[in-house]
Length: 150
Image (tube, rainbow, N blue to C red; front, top):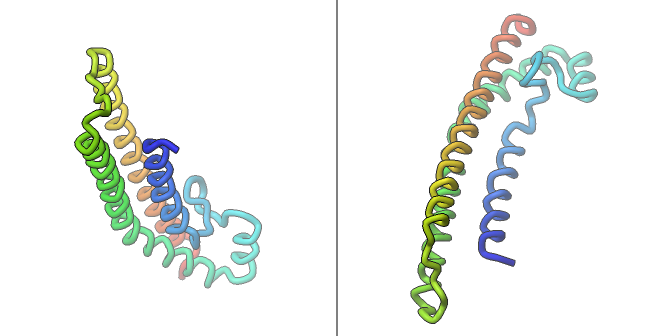
């Protein structure tokens, strides 16, 4: 297994698992109409509407305070993993001078610049998705306050 593959796999796992767990208790459709999402949520809402909506309201409020902290934590973890990987490669070359160290050609340097631009674009997309998620949560909080609280 290559170093890049291992690092990529580790980063993917670090990013996906925590974010999937962070909003597990939100049972409404945050992206469309803020109504119960799925059969079980619909049943809960029809049987216990007051407690269902109070719980959803609390879950969203909790997510609004917890997610920025999680985002910062995982952004830092990704950064640290990238720095660590670069240090490991540099150390490998330092410990094994007989290894052929690639001397980047002009096209490789251009590719490296393109990779950096793509990485920056991906960061901007992630930021936009995060902002949209925050907006959706706030929209649903307003919806709950208007339609489902006394």
